[in-house]
Length: 279
Length: 336
Image (tube, rainbow over all chains, first blue to last red; front, side, top):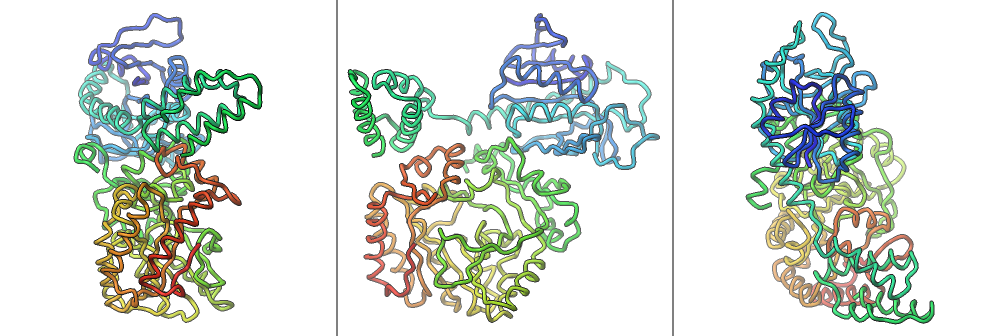
């Protein structure tokens, strides 16, 4: 599943259209859209709200380690090195207040520019720019999103993508312009998503035999009357055996039918099994 | 790495994280000159990146990042009992670089750190100052390539040559630079020093292909060693770790015959021999990230170290020693 967190509907609109998302009518404080293995949540403005919405989405919909979380939205550029509409993958995210710094793991190639992002609780304008600002770009959500999402997901699957909207000289945000800018950035976002999916699919897979081992262990636990300690040891030994031999030991199936009459008998069978699995 | 991986995974050192304190250090400047296409990210402390929660070690190995930092506090560490001291009583090691560019499946670093990224402490001059002070009181045997392969990173950070040049003026210091690299040409212009040992770790080609990802082949390592001995360098061979694989006897016999078919044993200073062994906690952590033949072996534990069962270990060591006896006197062999 790909979790997308935006602050405003104007930031979400182009993504909803492009990915064919439908509004989810579930009781919630948030506007949520889903479809095609994507879930988009609108957090509203601010570090804390972004953090709450991210946590809500990732827990409510049971995010797993191969899932991806993206914060997509507009930002202001402190540096003159950027132009309006530049799509930026943030390589460092700073919470202006806590001074906590977050570093996404950028393990894949991408077509975006990179820069650091500093998150504030209020809109930042040139004439009120704090002296101690560190980020190349500023927003009001990134740090909240990242701190929350990286509590649930591995760092290579959590990213902030920001589109340069202003140079800290704005008066009013134009929703249509925001929608257009996000729309133009979609090819870059899609490219990143595809690479992340490929990375997770190709390099984070267990063998199917190991995934199914739990069932086998349960059968043996019952037939041999194993204690919890023995069951855990058996599971670990079985995994190791499969990794070394790429299959289960042939003789293991004999242990399924065993009738146990005493604890001692169970222990003897377990010792036999342990010896087989050590080979 | 296959070509399809290359197409979407970022190159090694695509990002360099630099502590603000060392931005203008000459070593930093030199390293960044060699990595002009990398993204530079300024950081306050290397631990912000290296020790983050939620890193995926095995994925990071596909795209290692570089971290440039300043070393503080302790510069010298006592050599662990799990390693050879080659008869030197004051055996110490330094950690000028953390982690390695190679990805050997048996490497203890995989259990030691939560990150596959490489940290270079650029303030090498502070190591020298610290060692100067220690050498006033006692001689030192120093492993300078302990938590990395220094020679393999010579093109990025020329620390092997820096250590050799430093050792040249120190009579009561012996340094060992252990490597799998074939980058001997980086040292070719330096004068061989009596107190510098270049130590090559050698494994059968079958082991190289199966477990030592990204390392040079056995034959190219042998060529580099040959050149080093011909140029007058003191060379140590490390048959360590010896790994248990199917047909290990045949594989290691063929391997040792190949090694001494190409190298003159008289030109080798000494040899270290040891089977795979690893601290218990490191193996536990490795198992969580890497499910492979190395981590899944049913080792035996003794004094918090996992290694092969006693009988197998003895058989492996005795077999290797028996073959080595055909080429070198036992006085040159150190076993652990």
